[in-house]
Image 1: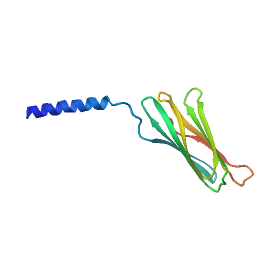
Image 2: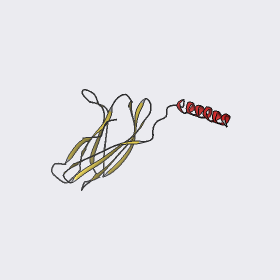
Image 3: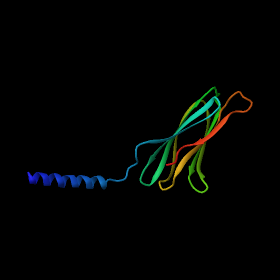
Image 4: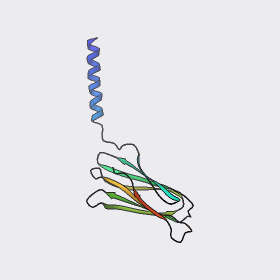
Length: 139
């Protein structure tokens, strides 16, 4: 019985060693999600990312617009580093309808705190198109 217990302890130690020695892999997909509105118009954005031991990698942007809008909405995304002052390290923009999704490849070292700021100008029949700007939480 003591022999079996010792074998189990040695096996468990070997398993623990192999787990800690495994190469660093990226985490599962995660999302930064934020919403903003202007009157009867609103948008929800999602920035999908992975975090490895060394960097944050953004790989998809998607958005959904609510309200009575046309097909020429202007959506802009700014990948920001939280610093004094904050600065943009990548900016992308899209024009289109109520929903959209784009694959991207934007990375930043994990040591940098980053967030996504976004701005939308809603395509409406009004003399002045409504707009809103907001940002996600930081990672």
